[in-house]
Amino acid sequence: MVAYSEEGSMSLTERKKVNRSVRGRIDESGKVLLPIILVASDGLEIEVEALINLQFGGAMVIPEDLTAPLGWRCLGARRVQAGSEVVRMNHYIGMMSLGGELKNVVVLGGAKTHPVLGQRLMSGRKLTVDFQNGTVVLE
Amino acid sequence: MPQLSAEELDNACWPIFQRLMHELGDRYENWLVVIEPNSSDYFLGQDDHEVLARARKRHPHGSFFAYRLNKDPVIDTL
Image 1: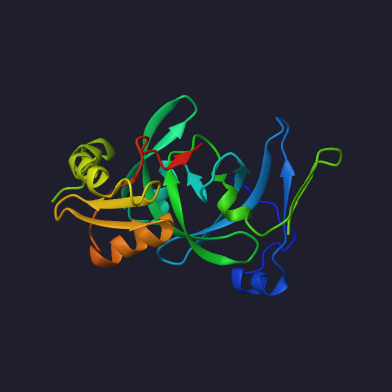
Image 2: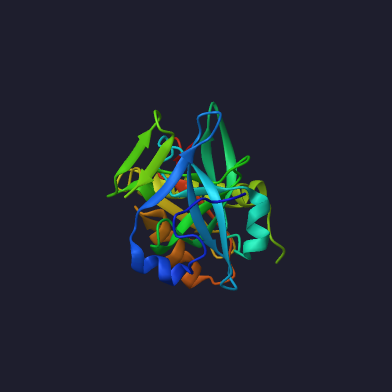
């Protein structure tokens, strides 16, 4: 998983000082992707691309196999409507950054490929998706 | 106590949820409830991060199942 950001190799702290805007991309299959940083329990920052899903009202879903390297403790589970079926998904509280803003959010485990970002993380921000130029900006 | 699977945790918490639905469902309809099965402690709120964090603070090593106080107890839609 690779993230694309203008800030390049700056640390998270340096990035926080720049601005909150994040630039993403639209992939070849039309998925709208934004780079995010997941902060492991030991402080290690892992940068991944996440898929925007505006149908999802929560904050974030990540593949379950990503939770072990992050060292996040599973806090149990909940029922989630996934398409036409109800599934049980583990929940975590994890630290992440979307454009320099470091925050703790509820994270569900069970995304298939990419992490998924939901409405909760878009709240109060402006999302621009330009299919003509293939650009995505979250301000 | 070993970590329960999501299904085992749901099964352990479901009877407590049903009792809470009966007792609190009218007053707190659509609120979230987070249940710790060993103590039967429950935590009510409207923000899942706030409620889960409160449950974790009370039971630092606990596992919790979360429901919506509704006939359809699903919390999120993907």
